[in-house]
Length: 544
Image (cartoon, rainbow, N blue to C red; front, side, top):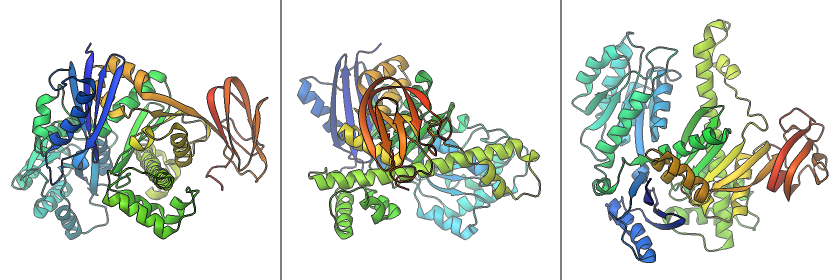
């Protein structure tokens, strides 16, 4: 088992280096240098590593047992996805791309409501790293797949680093020859097994593996300076979101918990969930804490952001502070007001990203139920209505056992502030453990998990995971001032109040008559509570 490790994550804004040797961990940040004027990712990597070397008086490149890296720089892996039916093959292709660590720039489908001209203009206007095209069951008709290939060919897509953009075709195998002949002059076509070989069968792994392979070969290797970085690493560079997902999956498996996690980056906010063994991941592009802070402000609205700021501040001043961060994305808050504004933006970014995640998971479940049980549903009921009826997931109180916060905004803020942001943004219901990736190690340990899983888990428990507290929050229509939670023999909380206390033992927790903690309205539950406990009586949604 390796003793000394150098783990690097090249993010959209910052490059993080962690050196681990036994009980020692050293961390250094540097500005990512993949964009102009530097255009060499190794400049930022070397600065981060040299910062550690100067502290420990030791050279690290070529001198550690294991060097691994993840990356989301330059926007990470940006993909254009195409399929035939939006709710079937395009969905399968979307999930395949997401599970590969991609940020999806657009999704094309025959039934997406756009004209061929509009689709061509969209393809021309974006510069994806890669295209994933799916469509049709194996052995089915090829007309629609052929038409989608012709649209892509007419658009002549341009990538960021290659003259001919790589295109992964994972559709009807009978259409391979036509797709190849149509697209070979404008893209480099790679064929994999169909992601949807039958209407009730999904097969994402071959396409996912090919995307990872091409990401290294065509994207990473051509990005400025990545060729040099690949010479140093001891395993393939992994997209940051994929690496983080690996550790979330590991947590759920080892702790046997339903887990929700967030990784806040400079450009995106990723939400991961593993519920009843089913994993999901969504990337909310342009919902981040540096380059895309302005987009969070616009999408959430000034009033939504302002509600979290205790200080008196005008909307104009708030807007100016947000835009300053967009202009100077690596700047750090230096005043209490700046800290409050960034915390408020973080709440809204997570809230918006979580809403998108719920919509995605429920839509995915609806698609599965329609596929499997659709024949048993009333034929006269329109498909959208069926989906609305069966797609709703009951995120009942207590369904989520643990929420984990990761990313610089949550890892390096005071623990009390991180706890508050997570509770306000996710609004957990029932009894929920809250934790934080305190060293921002989740993606680093995810890539380590691919080669040394036991060591990765040992380091996660040793250096990364830090419990923040336990949130007790009932749901239900409860009147202001009405008792909403009674932790027997300890504390009573009324509607609108939020109380923090320290507990250590097993307790009977009773909600108000109209409140639900997971056992039904007014029914008590018994739980082990250890450490800081936050009883949140503000209701769900908060203060409604």
